[in-house]
View 1 (tube, helix red, strand yellow):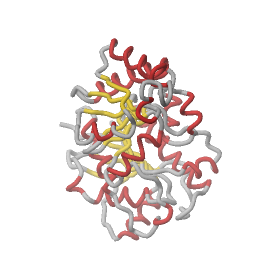
View 2: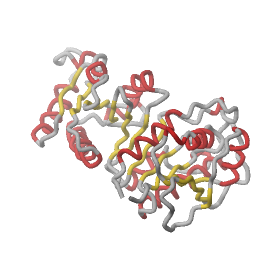
View 3: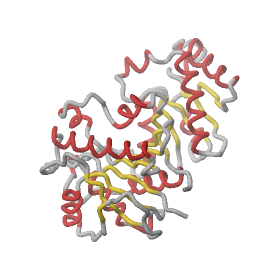
Length: 325
């Protein structure tokens, strides 16, 4: 049986992306057998290997039939950065990380690879490079409007109704039409990659989920009608639940997914619980895309201190969700 081809974009060269990529790929016993294609720069990878003292065999990628032996390849993108400044955002690194990611997406769309795993990028670096997208998911959503940001770990799963928006803008999106459409799309997206039956738990917006209108009206006017409409469409969904207890209801329940209504509502509990091993999974794409749930960590970049566990988990999840060849 042919091995999966999993692409890995190395993220911002000034952050810990190259480091955790090399460390993860070097921990071969932790990874499923596959062909791993690094989208980046051979000079950056070679330099990182020397710093870390890790001997990882990396061959140039050629789009032809490969041996059944798991291998690691490099796909040099163009244009390549002349040098990777470490520890801070820069326009050059922003442009480079975007090119790495964009090429990986193109090859996933072409079927060259079955999944994309993305090391962290810097939104500041992208902005400095003149890019209009605020991150990986924002870029993907321009081509796949149904893209949904979710976070998975062994102990908790969370899907975000809205993600990288200022809070006042996120709250304006909490409308029954938007919500019901999202609930149905989320259900359809999960069913495409997992055969199990999931139960979605919707978080309320206000304290105590509004307490029957005493602490806010959004639950009564917007959220409950949206939940009921999704239920009529066959979605296994409940809520809204008080935001301060909903995550306890889903904790250690693999078939439950919390729907958080804005970024921090979902990410604060998730990262508190699963920061080292959590995975960002983009749902609603024609291919699998995962990422570590942390950022570039400029403060420790180049020091060899970065923990690759979240990257390992991202690779493992990407492989487990990818259809067999």
